[in-house]
Length: 426
Image (cartoon, rainbow, N blue to C red; front, side):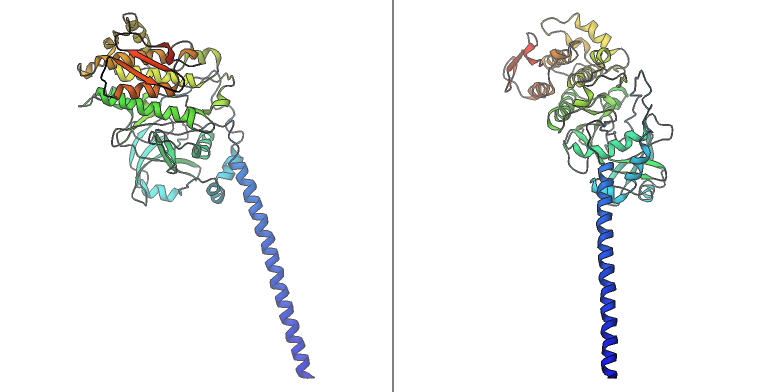
């Protein structure tokens, strides 16, 4: 009898124990599912559909000193803080950031990599830039958003969350998905009230630093043409390869970075937009003086052809070595008065070249650049056609005519003739 009672007690104890364990397991499973649901819900908040948010990439070298890129009728930061708490709350959840596919560095990691932020190599509108070496041994540039920066914290967040879209080798891009003409964003940090961006280090600085600084070796003509082609390929990808298409809105020589091999990459996407959102009229005009499309100023609508205009200004910078913000386009218009049958652009050539350039190539580029800055945007060439045209310049030629065949049309530039209007695109 006693044995039976002991067995009953023992069995009951085991049964109760199993029941408790089972109940705990069920409770844990319910909590786990709820946590996954909450995390998924938060991820949707932090990684929203990006139809109306800007895409941002900054340059990553001390030479990339960003000018004030806001020429606004209204304050560029009027409402940027209104949604900040929600974005910051989500971004601080490391698991959610990981769900977005965004590498995150801790403050301590970047503090160590920059020797306690003592390796300052420059400063721009975003804030100070530090050279750093991360645990993988790779050299990077760390940009810290200054408290008085003209660049907003909201732009920082949208840049981090949306850069994953862009993966072209002619842009500065994110997470190894790259095109060689885009600058690589390696990750971010948002701790202790600070916002930092980690980029691949571009050892040769910005194009502007080579054009305007008195360095022993000026850029050769062939290198200038190659840089123009690199930039054109980056923009071509943004306009036709990115999904959805993106307009940069701030193409300028200080936003073109050069790597160890002098290959150019497009940087600083702080005011970039998906094309369809940029097509809506806005009273907030953005860009950099000297590069902004006059049609954009008059209509407040930014299109791919507005990027083309800025690229045309950049071509004239490469040809002349003159600063676009110091009346370059007025000088171009003056020189254009003496251009006949696409000859005469050599007048604009950078004196530092000392005549070491192909006159026919320079006249070709001059004609191309002048078409890019046509006051009527629909008469400007597309970036696709610009890439074809610049590629043609670098080809060994056997005749007096550069010829490019596209799916849409065939266009020619007789080096002793005029620039063919079929380069233009609606």
